[in-house]
Image (cartoon, rainbow, N blue to C red; front, side):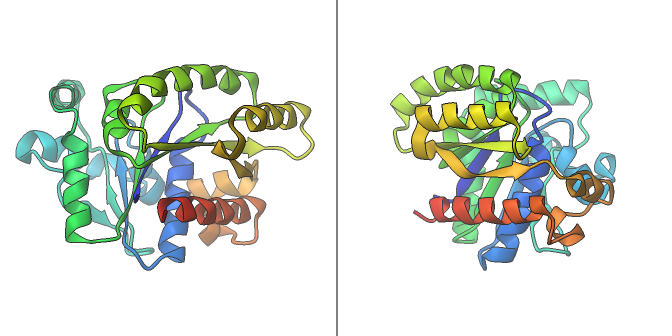
Length: 254
């Protein structure tokens, strides 16, 4: 079980930043190769790692021209291989989405090829918020889902939507594992604590026993196109992310 989809039903929850930092944490903690695939047209991951997203060809380009993911981009600082979305204009984005709609298993087939060529590879997939053709691709191939929430009522309101979306998927794929993670938590915040209690009562161990705390080092690291651990390894967020990567790594290894 080596493929993790990072999803949310609401935008602005820090999903792409979390994906980048989790990938970096996996790369540090494991000897296995780490791949991160960006299925979000906003190209946030490419920007996060390089600051030059518009210059990097990606999977939307290679899919339409070669029916493949391409070779990705090896990040020399940490050995992660990034497959950016690419710089598709509106017509090419729609053409790529049409391809994905016609072939629900397209992404899974290409991930399987990567994992055959490099056994043990950990694959993280970042998706745009909400229900989309990109999310459908992830639901068809991921071994595990990580659903990210903010400690607020708007995020809590999306939990029912996600559970409803997952119900028919789990009927087809009972082996699919899914967990929730709270991001940008503030110590002592009553709403955040109440929300965690509600999720714990409802989902038990499906709520990961770690929260990523709100920390200025996250935004500062992002501005410098660095991971939080590289920027400030002693920050609260860096410690939280290492713990989350440890827990998720254990789940992926089962």
